[in-house]
Length: 444
Image (cartoon, rainbow, N blue to C red; front, top):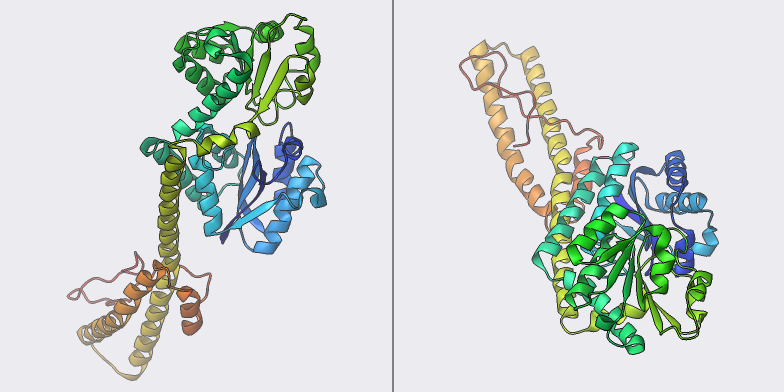
């Protein structure tokens, strides 16, 4: 079994295509159904956020699974495979692990360093469990990705990068409207990015902040933490009309701020107004930028923040940590993979010993004590013969130049690749004076 990820993200696809690829409504269920009908993907997890749609799968074949995942995604979203072909990417095995760990760490986010992706990954995990398409293999790698993400945020300064993103947006706004500390500000939404925005603005000295959100309880909690005021969602147009700087990140499907509403809220003597849209799909209709006296900035306009002083250093530290975690995970997978082979070799040896003892019984008559001594001697010989190869097999499995020794051993010993029952060489049968034997147990 092998890990594969196929998907679209802000790094590979234009915004317009990502907006059409969202798994809203019953599209998620349609994707699950399409994947179930195929033969190449045994378990899967879907990560669908505002800036990515990805299918992580434990697969039997590479090419067949890539085709199945790609066609299933297109079938669920109504996209044409030829249309998305250049935007789709696929990562396999360790590259897939590295990609997932980078996503969890916030390195692959449009707002680099944001931590909301961890909650989104947990949601994807839970969804896979509830719908019965998440197995142990994917569960293990996803849980490790969550641990990596938490470790990154706890031990590095990557959070400062996403804060810098907001500060970059403020700097752009101030070039048009002057100091934001002297301007009324509206924050549309109350999720993680909206909370980051409100806290960053408060830290910068902005005191006139109004939060509008569909989830009033979240908005009130955020307002309490930042000293902002709250208005209900149906009053958002009035709030926007009265603000000079509007930051929006709702996660809604479709525009929540339209050109007609913005135009209706302005007059000839209205001050300049700046919109900062941090959402994907976009919250702000691009036509808003055509309204007189209004300018709109998108996430793409803020990418230069990673080149700011200190940000590159933080990102390099995170990248190094992710690389180390991927290497450790790969070693642990290799070590775990060799276990069934070790067990199969020991089972093979146990079967040989049992067969030879049976032939000996047919030719030589021994009393119980003599037979037990012969069996113990054979056991010790075989154990000594297997000890060094077993140790070396485990060592080679976790080395970079180990090669596919498990396949070689299966070929040399003619082992059944599907047999993984753990066996030990029987030490004795029926003699109470010799050490007790075990029919099954852990690999020595």
